[in-house]
Image 1 (tube, helix red, strand yellow):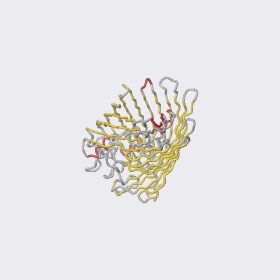
Image 2 (cartoon, rainbow, N blue to C red):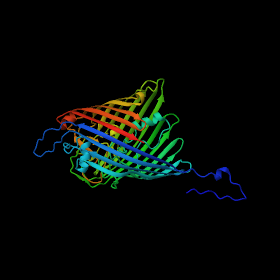
Image 3 (cartoon, helix red, strand yellow):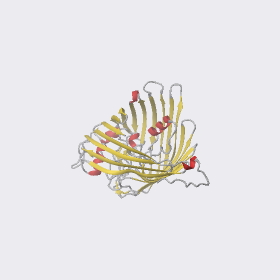
Image 4 (cartoon, rainbow, N blue to C red):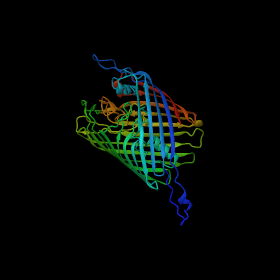
Length: 477
């Protein structure tokens, strides 16, 4: 309802006073993603004892996610909502052993059926902002990613942050069909030179779990970040993230060999990041630094861990195809002694792991990763190819994969781990992606990757070659 100011004969209203406020802007969105996903995981060893679980590593399945969203932008109040429907078919029923053999195994483990489906609200939140829009509070169910608290005005810097800083500790698990959202509150304060964020959340179920409408009350996340904005394309950030997990009995994912028991994890990460894009004669030079140290309690053990990533790249923005060549190194600590009273494996909390591991077969926990990347954009097509030399920080720890908690119940912790057997060589990964826009609202994406396994893989499997590909049809209005 629009209320007009009262007018008397004694005083003529000014043009500004008589102008009604602008009505809220309403925006609708519609998207649909259909993906065919095919795995040929490492070949398991034959059963060595009767009734030993040995999975089938070769399978193909298909999934679809449709989303209908609406956003109402007012002068001081913004309302967002989104409704999703997901359907998966032909999930592999025998792709477990040892561990899950690719993502299809985890979807099946969540349902126990060869199909999975759900309708759910993925977003429903209210944002209230100050009159000058320099502060805001957001309440409800919302997406959230660490490193994405502030949007840069420089497109090149924002692309760099989105690709190489977002979701390292907390993210939306966007590539999975059911994804992840967060129920809670977020406060943002923005000034010309800095931006501060404070948030408290309960993550929703999701990822591989079809009961996505539910949140996980036994998992709590508190996050704070302070970003320093520079006049040039440069940004520094300090952050702290608290993760507390008290779910019912689940698998203990570490190198102790412990049986399933109630989760008892309280960990705080402290860290910082730097991202910059500097013009050069032929394009842009970019650098990324990210580091975090962790302290807390891991099932009664003292937890001390750390991780650091350093990357550099150059984009020839004036050349045909705008080639972008990058290289970097990541180290995430592992636990070197299973018998002491200290847990030293870096804990990635609730990340979007596939953003940094396109094959989805490893997480940034007990990991070393030296890589090179090449990006190209010929005629609107986006292509990317990269090579990773992968190892474990400690051969006494495990080879981890996953993206964090996906369900309040069940024995799946959210990460899984395979014994390294004292080895540190995980393997070499080669990945390639291409995104082909066919229309303004329609694109086709493809991925193909392979991993040649090292001694860690040989310790767990008889085959040392993994291949994974998918083809994706995306429609967005």
